[in-house]
Length: 598
Image (cartoon, rainbow, N blue to C red; front, side, top):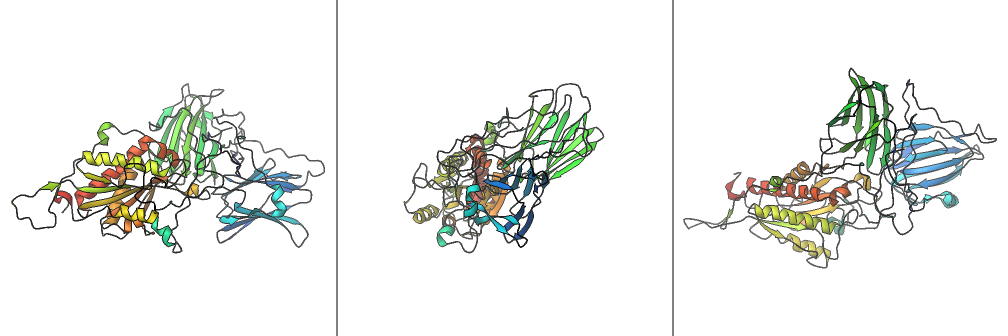
C-alpha cells in the first residue's frame, strides 16, 4: 500500500471532511500470468444474490445526477471526502467496477469490496458540492439520487442525515511508501490530514461582479474554508527539492528479464504518485514532453495495457513492449519539462529485491533549485535624461536613474490571501528581493511599503494611494500578489498569471514581459495574461502597470512553492528581468531608457 505524507497540522475544531482518499481498485494485466485475482464474492446469509452498483447518470447544466437502485434489505452510509463521496454498503455484494467520467462533476466511479466511490474534481464537505435523497419509483422500488456540482448545496436530505459519516481527526495513518506486494495488492491510496489555515474565495470574472470586487486583485476576498485548507502534498522520501530529478538511472544488480507488474497509484489532492517496481539491473530513462512523461525501461518486459481516467494529474497510463524492454507512457493533464510538472526518486527495496521508481505528477510542481550567485545579477540599466520630453538648451544634460514603483500587496491589518502562506508576508519578501536586484543594476526603486503596514485603513483608499505613487518621471508600476481559490475550486488554481488594465497603451506589453520571465525562471505553470477585471491599483495608475500573481496559497503543491526561498528567489529574478527588459526596450512611460529600442 502506498500512502502519501500529509505534513499539515491537525485542525483543532470539528472537521466535516474525511481525511482519507477513496479506495482504489487495481488494474488487471490482460493475459498476464500474475494477474490480480477478481475480488471474492461477499457471502451474506440470505442475500448472496443481491447486488449493488450499475449507476445511471445524467447531466443538467453544471449538475451531474447519479442514481442507484436500492434492493430490499440494502443499507448504506455516505461519507463526503476530499476526493468525492464514498458509499459503504451492507446487505448486498457491491459489483466490482472501475469506470470513467459519469459527468462534468463526477470524473470517475470505483466500486468493490463493500464500497462505491464517486470521485469529484473538488473536495466535498458535509453540505457543499453534493446532495442526496431517496425516492420511490413507479414500480415500488427505492432509488438513491445523488447530485454533484460546484454550486450544489445541501448534502444529505433530512431523512438521510443519520447515514452521513465523518472520520475523527487524527485517524489517518502515518504515511510511507509500502513495498511492492506479491502478488500485487489493491492499488494504494493517499492519506491526508486536516490543515489549520484558511483559503480565499475564487476570483470573480463575470459581468455580475460588483464594483468592490472589480476593485480588488484576484483572490483577495478572504473567507474561511469550511474544513480548513487542503493539506500540503507529500514529498518523495529522501528527495532533495534543491536538485532536479535525474532523467535516467539504473537499479543495481544483474538484469533477469522479469515481467513487470502494473504501476501502483497513490492519490493526494493536487498530486498523483506512480510507483514502478523494478527488478535488479533495470535501466530507466524519463522523457518529459508536451503531453506527459515517457518512462523507457531496458532489461524487463510488460504485457501491453492501457488504463484511463485515473486522476486529474494522470489521465491515463499505457504499457508497451520495445525491442530492448518496455515503455510506460504517463499522459498528464499539463505539459512536463525537465524541471517542472513532475518529480522522481529511485528508492531501494523495502522488502525483497524490487526497487521502486516513484514519480509524483502535478502541473504545480515548479523549479525549486537554488540560483547560482552569478544568476542573481542583472545587467546594468542605462540612466535616463533628467529633462526627458523638454528642450535641452545646455550642451550636456544631466542623467538620473530610471524609477520604478514596486507594490507588495496588502499589509498591516490586511493579510491578503491566507492558506499555506500569508500573502502580505510573501509578497513583501519577494518585493524586497526584486528591489535589491534592480538597485544593483542602477534602477531607482520606490516601494509602496517596506514593512508590515498599509497606506490607509480604508481598502479602496489604500489601493488608490498605491497607484498614485507612479508620479511623473516614474517609468513603471508593478504590483505583486499571491492568488487563492475557495475550497471547492482549490485544486484548479495553480501557477502564475499577470494582470493588466487599459490604463496605458503599454501596460499589456509590460504584463507579457513579466509573465514570460517569471514562468521561464520558475518553471511554474503559466495561467497567461488576464484583463477581465478592472483593478483599482492598475486603472488608477497613469504609467504602464501590471499585477503579478506569483502562485496560489490554496493549492497543496503551489502553496509549498510559495514557502520555498529558492522559488521566491526565482520569482524575484523573473520580475526584475521583465522590468529591466521593459526599461531598455521602450515599454515605459516616455520611451526607452537611454534611447535603447528606438
